[in-house]
Image 1: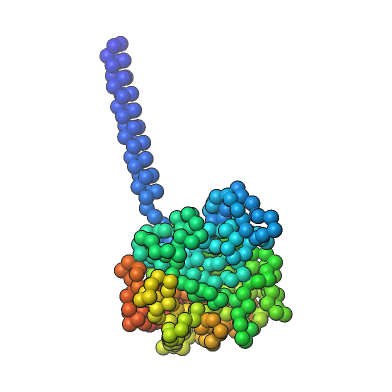
Image 2: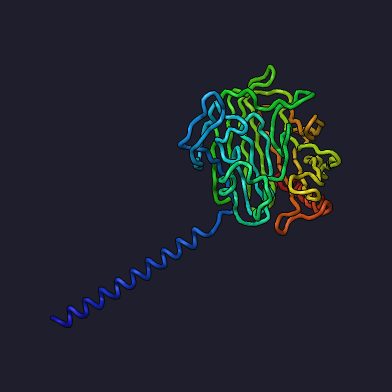
Length: 334
């Protein structure tokens, strides 16, 4: 009887020890999994727990919370302090971008010096901090009155009509193993005598520095456009692929907020049968033909402070040429 009790106790002890070891392994495995960062990341973060200041378009108090979907409040505009770094963001190990989710609708670049994800921490300590040089990098592009790099609006012949008149704007975030995307649905976007809905899907992939943008308007109209911000003394570069099906506009030079000698390359790749390159007052433009079909283009940038990045104009041109060949051969970069 006693021997059975002893044997039973030993068996129970062994079972408990085995379970503890198993649980420990599970915990260690979970910790290890949690420490592995995703290859791509997209987010939008809004304030909760505060309120709109009476008589203004400013949101006061509250804390930022990431959301998967949202509808932009009517009060929201630039510098409302409601959305962390003013809009959605995309990131992989090489680069990061953000879009101003207000009337400007420009796309900006976060230059990265590290190959780890940084967006979850950007702007949590105030709106101005990411304009300053930090160990991870900083906001490097001054968009001004332009569309930044790859933002979109309507070219009316002498100016770009941004998103000043929109009935409703809805945003959805999607993060998967292969890519991360932001879908923005604009309802009732009015420019001049045209009112349209517009769906924008912008996606980032695990490798390289580009975004894939897809714009689908509900009505056909002239002037849907994207582009690259102009800077004095930074010339425009243009090239068409061997088949003539794809082309790019690009710039390279001193055109950042990061320093007097800091270099940045920017490019837009587009289909030549869907769009043409023209000059606007603040942007080098790509203007799409009137259509209700999906318009696809690629947004690309290369900062010379990026870890193991592109460090010269010649290297940037070689990269652009390689991408043109890839588009010729496969019709896509991803």
